[in-house]
Structure formats: structure tokens, C-alpha cells
Image (cartoon, rainbow, N blue to C red; front, side, top):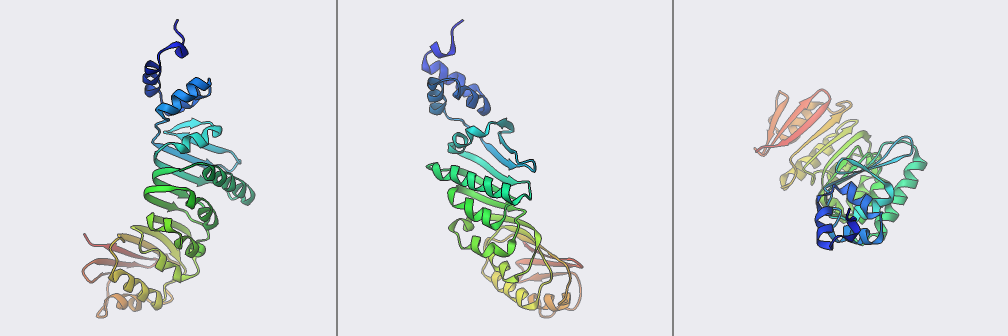
Length: 264
């Protein structure tokens, strides 16, 4: 039987190209020659997921297959289609350790390029720590951000312009945060209430907005009544749960939400 290492490099490359990314990573650990051969061909993975679990275990998957964490730096050097980072634990110390470890890994790489990036259940501090190390060619999505009232700091980073969607399940205390959200394509946030002043700012932002598509703002209580808010967008409003603003947006009200959608 001919050993793989004895085959011509062209044949070895053809064999590597037929392997799944996780198997290429395994082969890479066999010898220096195989490491060089795999690095020459590339890992060629599309989707990478990094999840910090409640038991303080980091799950790393490549195109749906479990991978070894010691290969993380190799994986992140590949040109990715989609990368997601998720912290599924509330343990602050574990989150700190792993966010700093990931930041160190990213910092040591020449580049971490991905077409899209998902940051799930991260705090603003963790987002601020990690975001500068990613070269995102397309969209950035933020799902389940904690401490949304610190979002102003994230909004000052250059990468913020690439964020297209955001989901927050914590209550907004500082309503001025809303002005940082309407460059997004879509977002879901929760607010204790919406005062007239905030509605006016939203109205003015929508006047010259070309990117925003839709949002849902979950309302705990309409301290300012729906009619008062509706009249900000449609002065002759009298009744109903649906209005149009400048024929460009449809705004709907329920007992616990404000929804805005760009008309097609």
C-alpha cells in the first residue's frame, strides 16, 4: 500500500481538496509535510460557530462539525462566509476570560476576514473588545445584546456602519440610544415608554434615511398616549392603529408595541 506521504504533491492536494474542513484540520496535525500541504490548499470552510456554554466549555464547529479549539487560529485565518460568536452563560468571570482569550487570538492574526458576522448575547463591553479585530466584508448582526444603554460607545466605532440588524431583549433606559439604531436595516428593542421627544427624533431621522427597513419597539407602557405619538407622524390623525408617514413608511401601534416598516 502506498502511503499518502509518498504520493506526488499534486495527488496529495487533490485528496485534501476532497476532504471536509474538519478532516483537513486533523490531517494537518499528522506531520509538518501534511501541515504545509493543507495550508497550501486551505481549510476552505464556510461557516464557523464559537459558543461559550454554561459549563465553561467552548464549542467550536466548522460547517456543522465539531472542531478542536487548538485549531481556532488556523480556522480564523481562512476566508469565511459566516462567523458567529455566542456567549451562552451569565458567569461574568468565564465571559471575561474567554472574551479576552478570543481577543488575544484575533489580535495575533494578520487578518480575520468574514463576509458576515453574528455576535449573540454579548455585552457592549465584549462587542467593543472583539469588533475591531474583524474584517467584515458584508453584514454584522447583533442578537441579544446586553447593557444596550452603553450602545453609544459601539456606535462610535467605524465597524458600526456595517451592522445591519440588532435584537435586544433588555429594556432601554436612555431613549437617546434610538438615534444610533435607524441606520440599521432592522432592529427589535424594548422601551419602558416612548415620549413625544423621542417620536419627533424618529420622525426627523426617517426624513433622510435610505437604509432602514423595519423595526419593532416593544413598549412596557404608553405613558404618552398612542394618539399623541401618532400625531407626530400624521398631524391630522384621529383614530386607528395604522398610519402612513410621507407615503414611505407604515407605522402601526398595538397596546405594547410600535412597528415601523418601509413601504416597498
